[in-house]
Amino acid sequence: MKRRASRRTTLRAGALGAGGAALFLAACGGDDKDSGGSGAGNNTNLITSTAQAATTKEAKPGGTLSTQLSSPPPTLEPYTQTSFVTAAPTSLSYSRLLRFKAGVPEVAPLDFSVEPDLATAMPEVPEPTRYTIKLKQAKFHNLPPVNGRALTSEDVKFALERYATFEKSVWRSTWSWLDRVETPDAQTVVLRTKFPYADALQIMGGNYGNYISPKEFADTAEATTRMVGTGPFVLRDYQTGVSLTFAKNPDYYDKPYPYVDEVKLFITTDTAKRVADFSAKSVDATWLFLPDERDQLKKNRPDAKFEETQGIGGYVYLRTDKPPFNDKRVRQALSMGINRKAIRDAISKGEGQPDQAVFVGLQDWAIPVKDLGAASKYWDYNPQEAKQLLAAAGAPSINTTWDHADAAVYTQAYVDTATLTQAQWKEIGVTIQDRPAPYAQYISTTYQGQYEGIGHSPRGIPYFLDGLSEQFQWGTGGRARINLSYVNDPQLNQLLDKQRGQLNEAERKGTIKEIQMLLAEQQYQIYYSTDTRTYFWDPSVANYRPSGFFPYTHVMKTWRDR
Image 1 (tube, rainbow, N blue to C red):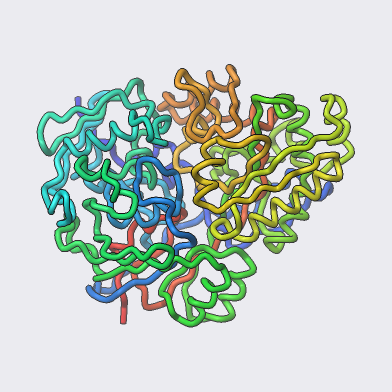
Image 2 (image 1 turned 30 degrees about the vertical axis):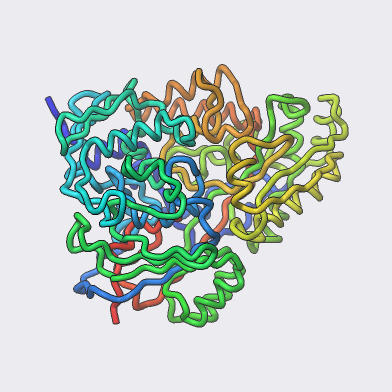
């Protein structure tokens, strides 16, 4: 008997829908109220969000919407790049089978439930390893080499199989559950999976690694600087390092969208200029801001609307396949050598909570750091015990490298976190050679695992739990996409494989709990604290609500109310 993958199925199978994950907004951070200066803390400041009332005003087509991008995209080609800066513009010109509902007032910013995009309806799931999807009558943009031809099931097959098997694809581990794509007719796609996969809908509807690009265009040299998709906006002009200008797609399949005639993304790498531009009303909506800039903008633009969301904590990754980081005592010592509260006080006005492998904002799934058993002590600042652990591991002093991006994209707070950590580690006998790099270089080298010693990165809000496999799995094909710590733990691999196929939420929660406890003890990655991220927009921008994801998912539903 066939069944439709309804919202309830989405919550169960995807595991991270609005009801299933208790995702939240946080109006403020606060003190951990811990005694050791940085420790486990609690989750009392993680406030669950609620949906707002839907906009009742009549839409006003026309006009321009301008917003910000924090860096030039390293590329516009979706198959070979993991950058969130790439995902922002690609979400305007490309489409996928499903999309997040978030991006409008009536949906909370961190609601992971999905709705049809190119699909006419949610997939039919006649059996747990088969998803049947009917396609809308969509056309590619009227640009060469496709010149407005119709999208067919063969285009979807090409794109998904390219993500899954293309040698240069960075998404192979993301799609490792996909067995094959069948095309019984031009408007029908059937996804066959290797096993029942719990996060299939989230992968189809997420903001990375699923956009449909035509075969005729994907392998051209122009694919890095142009986009030819079926999305709501057509890229008309790209001034490298300056701006991207998009025009309304007159052939967009989801009528009456889009409402605005033009979208402009201004590439502004300087945080102070992003503040100044919105303060001067030079742009209509902003990129994210951390607490200092947030408070400045609240004073400068009391008329503006804003949304505060709880951000995920960044992390340190290490070459655990090599000495000295292959000894867990060294990793535990490094974690205890970080004064997280001092860092929060220095860079985020004390806001935030200690984070761990499973983002503590996923309150139905994450174990608060204070409840991680004996391993919770590794979040406490304890330089004396850290020195003892290093000595016991035979590494009383360590000299190593720390690779990271510069401040242009990830903000000065990210670089300051590295500087403060390195100073704290020096007190326990760890000497760092700091190696910053431009973002495009970092994301294409260090963040692809090309480093020695230590690396440092922010994290994206996880919209599927199997993101844990992406971070820690070592399978038959080797290291997963962002297993940047080169973890190869047989017990962990077994647990990761187990949770991927668990469609029963209670059973999966049990496995995810085991994974969290193991990761807390092993400290394969070392985590900082959550932060508060605030987005602002002009009051004339209607039917808009920032999502917890950087791409502007539902800009096509926004209009100018003036």
